[in-house]
Image 1 (cartoon, helix red, strand yellow):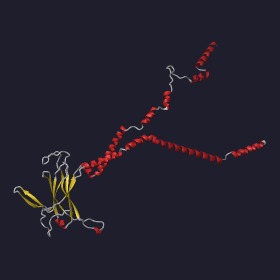
Image 2 (cartoon, one colour; image 1 turned 90 degrees about the vertical axis):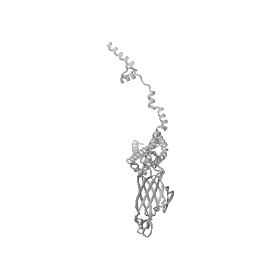
Image 3 (cartoon, helix red, strand yellow; image 1 turned 120 degrees about the horizontal axis):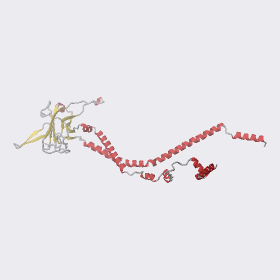
Image 4 (cartoon, one colour; image 1 turned 60 degrees about the vertical axis):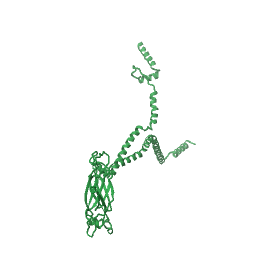
Length: 379
């Protein structure tokens, strides 16, 4: 093969192996894409390793929180019980059903003549025993009547309600006489065909307001019994009569003046004022506030006691970390310190150090300097 043919062959080979511009661009794009993909893969690997390391870091905290949350249901139950107890401490009053007596004949004994007379009670009446009352607590006593709409009741007009309160010694402590009347009221209905009048009317008659068994705790009652704070009065009785005293007179076509009653109930409402009165009217709010405050206080106290008494779950890690010194500390502890004399205040210069390595040490240099001095003196 001649020289010209060899050069032609080499030029042809270089032309075939030299990459084009398009191939270079594609190669650059592929290289950049692979680099970008590798970076994202490394990023995801780092994130995964960090997520996997989180439980190891926060495991003691998670165990502490899990151990503390086990007592929260008990604290919540105790708080609810405290709220119910506080709500029940507020007096709510009382009520008692009355069984009205009609056409009753009373027997009255007179000791003077040693004889007994019969007297007819013209109006319906009832006797009942009151529940234990709190000393010094004001009460509002009222009577609730369910009266049917009958021609006799509507023709009766006004009627009287009489109340007599007596204590255990049959001493009258309070009396009341209140007038009342039955008024026919019509109730509107959405459907006109169902319009009509109610069959029973409920009448509320206020009898006694702001009455208390004893003005102040510790005072002597009429029968000479001292009442201590927190005690309750027992043995109170109530006599109730409803109707007209002239019921024996007839009306119109001969009907009597007696009031027909379906049901009668005597109510004793506790009269509270100030903050107690507000919470007595809003018991649900009192229950929620009491429960929330008690739960917050008990939870705070439990957290304090838990932090003081609970064992530290990370104590072993702290001991291990404190017992094994770091590599830097080990190096600091094991590396011997070089001692310098007080006269050696300046470190050796760079030129002296280089000279000591090249010329065999400081002694060699001193000797050379002395030779130079001798040669200078000889000249």
